[in-house]
Amino acid sequence: MKRFLFCVAVILIVAMAGCSKKDAEEIQETPDFSDYYLLGFDFGGAGFGEPIDTAAARVVICTDHTVQVSMPHMDGSMLLGDYEVRGTLTLTDEQYSAIENLVDRDRLWNLDVDETEIMDGVSRGLVFYDDDLNAVAYYGGFVSDSDEEFWTIYRGVLGNVPVNEINDIRIIWLTESYAKYYGDDRYADLSNPEGQMQIIYRNDYKWIARGPEMKDWYANYAVTDFDGDGFFEICVCKTYNNGPSSIISIYEVTEEGIMTEFDTGSIEDYPDLVIDHYTEPIGYVRDDEGNCFYHVCNIVDNGIEGAEHRYGVMYFENNTLHFDEITEEEYNDTQEEVTLGWFSDISIANIQDSYNSFVNGA
Image (cartoon, rainbow, N blue to C red; front, side, top):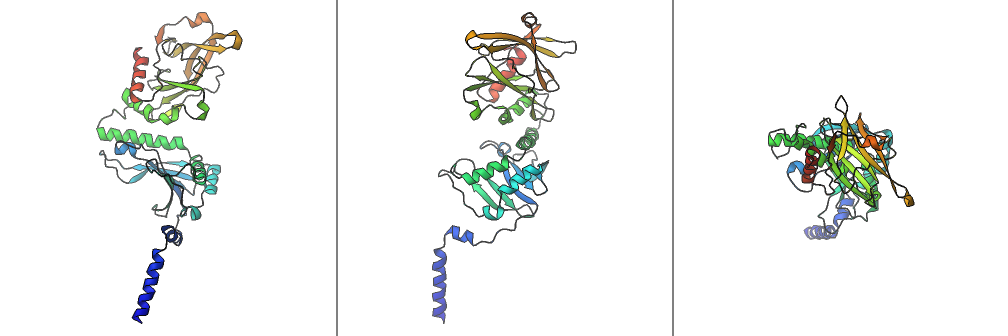
């Protein structure tokens, strides 16, 4: 009898040794997924630097169509604590339905992805939870570009959540955390130029001009305070084939420490601010209330007939950019000048130099 039991044990051991890791996973029971927490993912976070910089937002999509955005507790040291909900956003019915239709937790939790051979890039994936918000499964990893199903699902999820608002929550946390760590207001006091420049730098994903639509276009950037309210803007000027004609976008730091875009939708011909390779000062006048009106040129390409100079006054009202046509005589009638410090390489030093150029004309 003992010999029989020994033989059975040997057979079982051999059978288990021949079982792959994947086979073992396939016979596991499906996790007990939460009825409230549909899925989650990490958002943001630098690949290197201080723990504050590398901390990602934990984003959890719930079945009541809300999105919980959490960041680590920060007590003033670089030791980060447990995640705390910092903001709750709401999805539309269409957004939630699109995500729900993409994600089949019962199938994805045990599905392998095609991973890159060198796992030194960025790990991306979706997290599935139980009712206590404990992670019970993960779909993703260092995923290869060849895994079309993963990228369709992952990008489909991110494409249906308010990523700008999620990033704003993380940026506010970063600002507060650095203020606690340094024990002063140089990152939180927005009356301090350094604090505003950090906000611009950390929100670069909002204003950097990139992507396939930038083919044959060139982008230059300048720090400004066109509306004179003390909150800096980043002016983005895109020129086609590096010619004089351009399109501009402007983003401003807000009192909350985030950035918002000015409305330029009603403008048909944009003022051409990048002229003679960044050295032309812009003349302006002030009204009795101190509002600034900038006299700028608009170069219109008339093809074989050459370029035509048109003149206009650029001003800002209620976060909206206006550009009204004026005569050449009016264009030349200005009181003061300002020089924009254009740059193309994104760095905190270039942002600082651009700010100094606008303020000091240097």
